[in-house]
Length: 114
Image: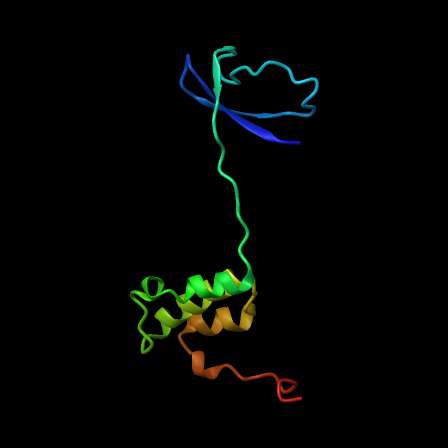
């Protein structure tokens, strides 16, 4: 069920219309002023990236601008961003350690070495 965006030529506002059936599509009207003078807009679309492409893009030198490896807050922001790019949840322990500024206090799980 696609969503289409229209620009009203009368009130100049955007409307999003859910089309339940392409075969029985009702004429589009502005949801703000009910005008039938609307123009369909080209909508944005998402293009998923592979894990390798996301990692490569995140390591682009322009994305590393402002990163200071000696500043724990800068590193925390970078690690949080990297985790988000990779779809990983770094966990509450990581977030708490980064907020407290005590990144060295994080203890590895005892099961990590198994």
